[in-house]
Image 1 (spheres, rainbow, N blue to C red):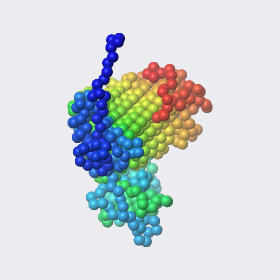
Image 2: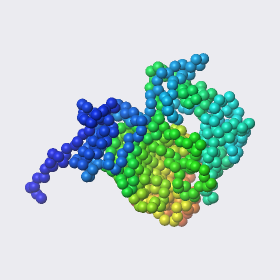
Image 3: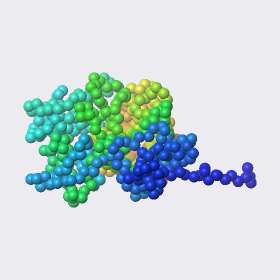
Image 4: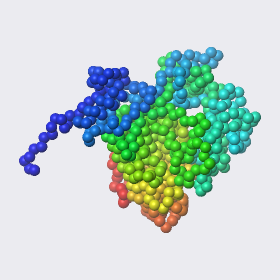
Length: 608
């Protein structure tokens, strides 16, 4: 081939552009005459038959009344890609209605009201981009002030004294790793009768797991954390109440908030983007870059309430019992849902002020990624990837070869406290690397599912959790960790992560729960463990059915120098424990971790 020059044709390198604006209309889709998001979809798909396409979003806010839906026909065609790129100044998809016409409520020093738009239903409100809190009242302590009964809460009626609509009040309580939100159905004497099937589902169990111990019926139940959603609870700055009877929104401003100029957003849309493919009919070759996703709600059933099994997977309907492996639960929805996608990429996006989760890559979505993005102030978790069915009918229904890398995740699970930063179900090939996670009520990263009831075979493979930086985790709930795993997973590892307990005193650093098998755990730094812990230690592999674990070359200031439940296939060696200072090799792990860390240091890990 020497001496032969190969030149690309202009057509090969040409990028076709489609321009979109917040007020775009028509079919021109040019820079001077931008079109709508929906018209851009139609134009981009047809253009991609002959080349790559870039959809250029002008800066501004794009208000959606329904999700932007992508089907297979919206894919890049003939091997070409379609890139949706936002403006550096901010191109935000928003699912809210702006609320105006505020007035001070007569006779109330600091209570304001505005008309509720006709037909609008929401569970959230944001003022100048800051989350407002549903009006709440102190809960009740068990067993002195309230106690569990089969119908509800004995002795708790005093907490709702004077409330005009007790049937709208929601009781919220966290028990161990679970966070329950059940509506009050009625007041009966001194007791509260709770809505069904929510209250029944809090205690429903499987014969083998004992999940009902982590319920209002269990010994760890300390009472109701708070009651919420009543006009009579208003008073604290930053609280709101939506009065559907009077058609009004009430809000108590925070200091320095002026209601005549404030940007008040009422989320009314549950999803902003839905990529609706399937393993048999995939949506493919799309990317979304430098875009903002704002202001969603989630209108879960008031009777079902919010009853998690774990990590944003919910018990719904009238259940007699639960499967031992935890399959068949309903996942909390996300602002961006990707079903059956292939080569779907999200890069440098901003997920903020959302009423449920951030993004979900599920139903066999593969070869896709979420990178360099920020997730902040979410009611639920940031990222879901993979599903919780260990044995799908077809192999292509299993998510594979996805990447979650260099994201910043903070202040998530603001309402649904059992949610985690990154929740990975079953995956065949998954990289969770160089993410920074902080300010979480429960676990940081969770991978796997199934407890000990998926059988003796491998149920996923090649899950790599590497070089993440995790701090201020387990701030509210219990029985979790910075990194949590389940399932038999050949070729998998937890490597070169930096975990800091600074500001916390609860949870395991690395939690190899239940049937975690075939993991290497190497080169991690677990630091800042306080002298007095509520519970937990730098690593836990408590179950006798975990095994085939290679735990070595880690650093911690934890005084536990041995595995608390060793076994013949749990290799535990060359770990540097009970340290008071970090050696240079460990400091290199710290420096390389997180969203801004450099490449991984050289470590004696076989899967590094």
